[in-house]
Length: 69
Image (tube, rainbow, N blue to C red; front, side, top):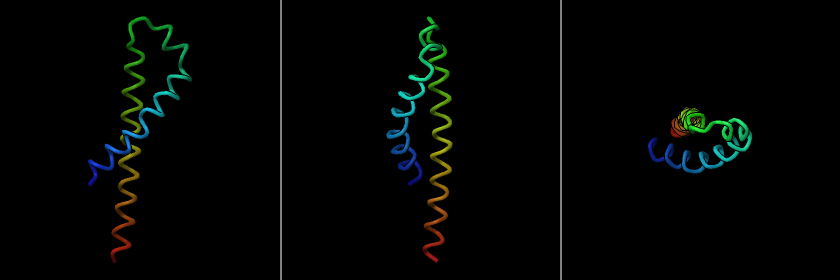
């Protein structure tokens, strides 16, 4: 269940976050001819978003366990 939740979470939030962050960092991205800054920014966003998704899933899982009792 965790893999499905994280996949759905990333599928929904990654495009939104990438468009926002690349919009904010447009001068940095356009100044870099190699595209390395784009790759680094995208990896950082994906890792942080995955971490946030795991934390949210853990809270949901704890809430469901408390509700079962």
